[in-house]
Length: 442
Ligand SMILES: Cc1ncc(COP(=O)(O)O)c(C=O)c1O
Image (cartoon, rainbow, N blue to C red; front, top):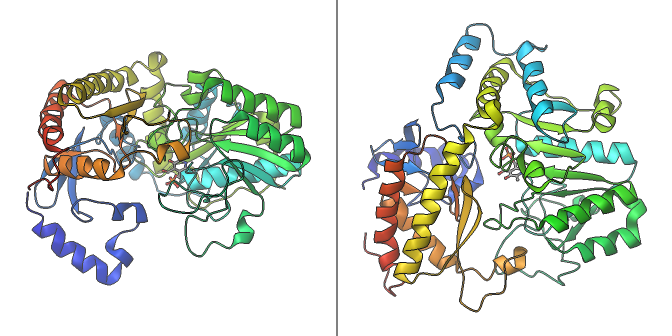
């Protein structure tokens, strides 16, 4: 593969755009941040003409593939009618109605533009409703980049402190320690520690936020009993349970993680698949909480919230995703199962130890030592062989297959049998040489 055009543009970009990128996560790119020309269904083309089978899918949003006809048609129609009105459109009501119909906790919905904003709205609401300050979050979970929640990320080689009471670690320089004053960080999947927090500080705790699949640690799904415990503790102590479904929303089915687990939170955040690639997010939840925004004293605002173009596309995406109880999603799950099974067979045949977690439409591959402890939280995820994952990810890239650098494979409804077969051929080539001590020749 040649990357000459991307290289030229990257050098040009670096002069006017810090790091040449507009989201720091894109710095983790192979062989450097590339420039793209187009995308269709499950395929991406960079500006040098290299083609990739895409399992990154824009870091998750493109569940319907890159060019879903119904979404594009809806956006095109709206483009001629105006971009932002500072007013309402029918599409936002219809989209909210669909969410209310399919998501267990959703009695009302508010729209934003990004997952980080939806999380921000959820925390604001939890604090407003309870008149308390503290939020329990879990080590290694990612809830966006805002100062008051972006703490204790998954990062190898740093001081973690005691498991029950981790040292507070900002995800970035420039985050004052005061911004974590109202956070309590707990280990994932450990109900006893959370129970202890409620026992000692229950009357200070406004809410608990978690990503039910803990996507930032590879994937570490919640144990069902753990989520049930969180729900009971929140109910008993009058705190708000928030599921961050920015990734799990619509990927685990029309009702997301809450339907998958059968545990209904008070509030839930959505983005990514919700807008099929458009800038849109949502906070959904119980009317008793959500209606506080309607009383106006609890502020939620944004110039671009529910902008007509995003809402037209979102409505079209939801209509497709939620029809016939999520029949469309079955395509992504079928393709994902084919890929998961194929990779598992290769791992067995070639003697490369890979652990799989998640659901077929969204699963992670982790390289674990034979004597590894079970993966239940961020600290156990640190046992994974990061160097081997990096080699797998970068080698696949040069074979024309993109998976996320964190070991997650996102499937779309447009991945074909042929795409999966090609991916497995590439994976066989990579895995058969991955354990060799020398760097893989390119
Ligand atoms: C679980 C989760 N929550 C929140 C966010 C933040 O969303 P955004 O990048 O749209 O601000 C992300 C982004 O990856 C996420 O994975």
